[in-house]
Structure formats: structure tokens, C-alpha cells
Figure (cartoon, rainbow over the protein chains, first blue to last red):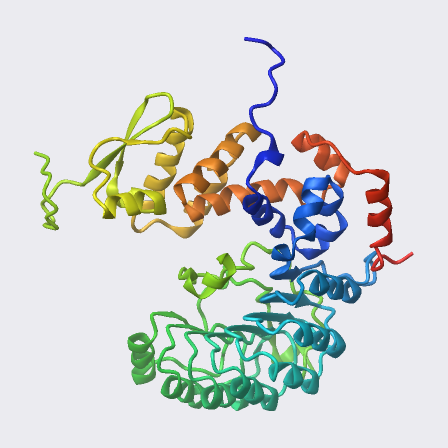
Length: 302
Length: 160
């Protein structure tokens, strides 16, 4: 055998859709800054609107240390999708204008994820909701939208099947609030999956959700310290919900930092910052922590 | 002993199917493990899997590993954490093997294996410069000067 046989594998020989799958896993920032600069083949794949059906703007969150204007980059990604974007993830840098830019151009968005988007207002989100009639999967984690915004979303997005509304867990025994739970119960009847990590709701809120969301199969109530799942309510949960996470269940597979803030450490009503939220585990981006039914994401593989 | 009937009685031995690689090696795989391959699943449904299934695109070396993967992932009661560790170990292989895993998973339509192998490749690309990527994957930059210029102009999101 010759000792300098050509390699049996040429990475550029991979079928285009597989190369697309691989490059998609890099996230939009790396696709634009690196992948499209490697060779003409990758550049061609990165220019294809098919690549931009899913826009994942994950980043380290260190915006001041970043070389790039993420808002401009995201607009560019939306442009590249030619209106075909169905799935978009925005972390740390969203604005009302960007959200409007996206929803004005992309009419078939089915999944929206906003994490730590403190510059997106209730009005901005509500206006966007009116252009998201096909929305099926929504995450609003570590943002601070009002219950009115949640109501509007529920009313505008009848196909919503999955909702994540995660917050910092607080052991404020006197800070109870069922507003969000009630908004969900009244307006999001089609939910199959609900994650309310760190929510301040009580058993009343939980009951309202159980009463109003008959299709609910997955319910994550970790760090909801005002909920007491014992007795009949616990029994009802176990009967109705296939996959239940209770308030004190382990959080090792939770995507974000699960640090609890206790009453004693705060004077303020609201968290002082998100510096200890760890976004470095991106592996779970397309998966819920234990949500094995990928049929919800069927559209991503079309 | 083994029965060819399709009884679902629990006392029935496990149904196996036989796969034949491009270089003539045969491998037995439990039907339940084979169902992770959409290609094999439809063959089983259409009763085409009773004789050895020829897989001319896949060598024995790779097919053995694919069978191992499917068998492992068909086990019941597997701990998620240890399965993840097993998967990580499974894709800690040289580039040619990883490349072949991808092609085999694509041909046999095994979405979990395809995703695992593609993620492994993506992890090699993450955080690297184009030059580093050229070296790792033995790819050449093929841009014309005009294309390089276009790339530079497109970079309007970069802070100067």
C-alpha cells in the first residue's frame, strides 16, 4: 500500500444537508464570523436561506467585551433567511426594534426564545405576538414581562404547545404571586409542556393551570417554593402529568444557574443582576431537559 | 428454539435480523435495536428483513460499531448520565471513523447517532479560526480575491 494515500474522507464530500446540520450547531455568531470564511463550499452553505431557518444568537453575554454588534448581526441573519426563519434565539441583547424587524419579515415563526432580554418592553413583545400566529414553542427566561404580556401572547398564539418562563428561585415565603400562573391558565389552553422554574405561584395558581390545560404532559415546578405538592394536589399532579418536576427536585439538568436567593440576602424585591447565570451549556438548546418527544420539533427537520 | 412466527408472547426469543457489510461480514442485531434506524424499520415493516440485509455503503468495521450503538440505545432503564458518558466515549474516535459514522447514520437514518456525530464535529470547529479549521479538517481556502473582498465588506456588524 502506498504510504501517502489520499485521505479516505474529504469533509467537503459530506452531503450538503449534513454539512448544514453541523454548521448550524455553531450558532449564528460563529457561522457569520468563522464558518463562512473557511472555504467557498462552506460559504455557499452559509449563504443558503435554508441555513437561516433557525437563527441561534447564543453568545457569552459579555457584550462589552464583544467585537460584534449582535443586533446588527441578528438583522443580517434575518435578512439571509429571506423570510424563512421559523426559529430564533436571542440572549442578552434583544430590542423592540430587532423583534419588530424579525416578525415583520418572517411570518412563520414557530419557536421564539428570549433570555435576559431586558431591553425588550411589554409593548414590543405584545406587538410581536400579533405577528406570531404560528408560534408553538416560547421561552421567556430571566426577562421581566408583565402578566398582560403573557395574556396577549396566549390570545395571539393559539397553537402554543410549550412555554418556559424561568426566573431566579427565591425563598421569599411572603412573596406569593399567581398572576403569571393565572395568565397562563386563562390563555394557554393548548400547552403540553410548561416550565416555571423559580416562579412565585401558590397552589391556587397550580390548580388553575391543571384545570385549564388538559393536554399538559410535562410540568417543571422546580424552585416554586410557594407550591406545596402534598396530599390531593400531589396525587392529581401525578395522575395528570406524565413528567413532573417538583419544587425540591434536583436541578443538575437545569439549563441555567439554579442558585437560590434567600430572603436574608436581599433588601430589594427584584434580583440585582444575572451575573451568576451560566449560559455555557448550549447542548440543551434544542432539547428540554428531559423532553424526549421530538415531535414538537418536527418542523425543524423538514 | 427460535421461531419464525411473529408471536408477541413474552416467552418468544428475541427477534434478530442480520446485516451484511460491504466487505461481506454479517452482524446480528435485535430487531428492537434495529428499529432505531428508520431505514431498517421500514424494511422490517415490509417484511424485507428476514434474509441478511445488504449494506453496500458500510464496512464491517463501522457496521459493528453502529450495531453496538443501536443495541446500547435500545437498552431499557439506562441512566441518562451514564448514557451521555457512553456516547461521548463512542465518538472519541479518529476523523475517518467519525466521518464514516456520519455517512452510516445518514444512510440508515439513525437520527440520534447522526446528531451525536455531527455535534462532535461541530465541537471541533467551535472557537477556532478559519486557519485552524483548515488544518484540522484538511480543507483548503478556495476564495478568489473578489470573494475575500466581499467577505470583508459584509462585516458591517464588526466594531472597528
